[in-house]
Length: 398
Picture 1 (cartoon, rainbow, N blue to C red):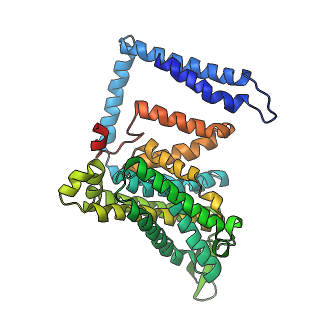
Picture 2: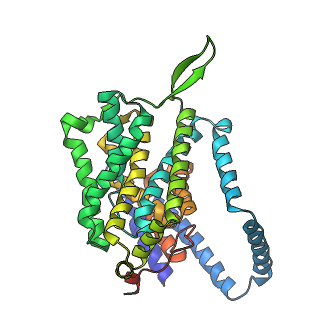
């Protein structure tokens, strides 16, 4: 019965997307074909699951489960640092074996990993729902854009300024929301994100409004040259391959920083606030300062990613920092697993790289988001790669 209701709701959502055309005509054929495929496949999966529960496939599933358990035991014997090293080496070598398109997608994935890890501090570790996180991304991007255009400051010097400006914005949004929880906190952060976007859009003297800021400098690098004696040369990192390694460095820095924070006393205090804020306060945790610190630290990594985004595009405008971007970063955190660094990397890879693979279905991406989130909440409520330390919030038991 639940499956039938879900399929009926799916068609209610699918038909407006495929059956209503720009000229006002209404059709049912295409939507019914897609709906029929989904019903058939999901029905087949449901039947196989029911048969599996009766033990019909034990002759197949039991040996497969034994092989899987043996493989997991073998994987567990490999040190974690070795897996990270293999992953880093593969990521580092990617530009040597791929073209411009793959590198461009990989850069987008790494930008969203930085954003997801920043939001993970607020949502995953401290348990504060933030729907306006993309505002810090915009603050970092505009900080570098303005400093580059008006003061000709180099990218590497502007990075800490972008981080500090975003952290200050995080404190500004964090301070009035310290006494809020749940839905009220989500509404306030959503409003903050829209306020920042409207400021960027309407403050013509500072941000050039909807026209944006054009002509932002790419990162540069000095190096020693011995071609004609000893000299110090400068190179602009405009090539996509160079930008790839810049964001790779920022991503590694973000991963290390978030990992260190997660397993520090501050990280434990954030998790205590996430599990039960009242109990944490009674145990001596200064919830005021730590929640404010969570907003500031999360915004810092968002600001760093924003500065790189401005340097890569050499142009920023308010259209790049809409609520849809905040929702996408939040979806990556929830889909991957709140509080889990590998999970968030998987979530970013799934929501950025997979739409490129299925580019023909780009118009239905939001429908896919909703469907994926619903399926995740049913089958894996803690995400693709859940965090090892994650309890149950006291509010969830009410």
